[in-house]
Image (cartoon, rainbow, N blue to C red; front, side, top):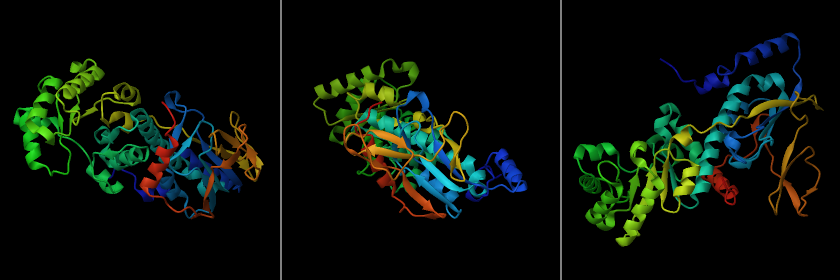
Length: 385
């Protein structure tokens, strides 16, 4: 049974909302097909976020390439704020109008995941974050979740296919099942050490049977210098204060002269509790908050018809461009791209919006995953959550 939409079906408009096809029929019958300018933007961001990360552009452009349209956009991986157009499309309405639904779908979920990943990375600072979200969503979209989490700044992924697609090695620790079957944490750790290649870190769960602090010290003694880190994934019913558990483990390891042993934690994490844990924890496995990240509610609005500004009420008509001050980073959304603007600080403002597609042909050189990820990390380095 075929459940998932294929790329051909998406390109054919099969995943669009039916009223766009009805609009197409009406306009054809009325012999109306004007040149329009449409902008994609978000009025607000979820949960009161001050900023977002724009991703999904490469996939979205698959819908547009070959059509007789022009596209301007922020580079993928760019910081954006409410009210800023992230993509602008100019062309005959019937050329692209029926693709609005999948076009928004590509960037709404992608940007939501990348934004959450970036927020977690900002909270964690230099600490490691891995995407553990594969088990929380349909497996067919596992590479999608992990791609946009990685672009957003996480340091690795756990799923095998995701690692292959990204060109990185998947990362993980040891499941509770092995410890349960072998009957003891230390016994499982020794078996892990004997079996798994030495280039893979020895990070062992300590919450299966006994107190996490006790298990940590047992592992530190049994594995010696081979123990790289322990992982806490204590069930909520037994957790109490996770920050306090991590603190106690860190203090006990330090007293035992094992500052070299790191602490990794997972289970229900997001940017808020990462900030609380960061003093004591060296790495995080973040799952549901990435895979179930709130989507960015982008909308597509016509802002010009045949070159004349027009839009629906509550929106702002006219094609707009995003400018940023080279010195202080202040941004403005302006109507004229050919005017030189100065910031209040006296410095020149440069245009961020880039021409991406001209007459259906991609004019921007595709970037690598790491190029995009590095842009994200650069743009969020001074931000907070």
